[in-house]
Image (tube, rainbow, N blue to C red; front, side):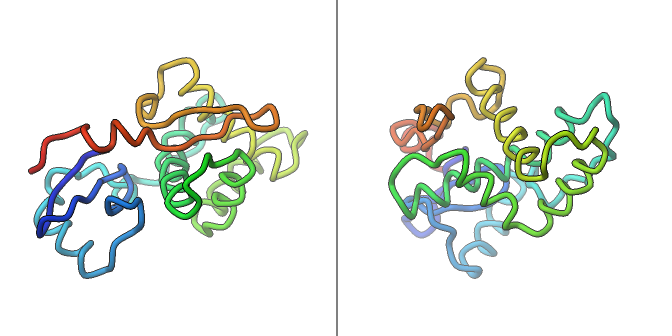
Length: 169
């Protein structure tokens, strides 16, 4: 996550969107100004990534490349509202609630053997995200704290890291 300052206020680029220092999405006007001033520094946004072609042997990696930034965004947004860990169930709910991600995951689910329900499949994708953090190979490994809740990983942003990650631009 990258930190930027605009009009003496801190804003963070999550990899897929802007959040203010309270982890809340800023107004459209602020987002537009942040994009004008800092957009060239954060070109890897979710909207600019092409929708991947799903190939069976590459499914988990391709799907994770698409949904991991969305999962991170869900964690930041839900943490901003609750101030508490975000559970696996909340992340699954957040993914399904986003129509473009739901459509993407429905298409991916249709390419499976069908042994899992759609909700179980989405939960499995959240588990892949969790595995990357737990095993230390995810780009989000230093952005979230983990805690087991009902035998599943739950997440919240590492607040001390957020405040000191990047110098003010």
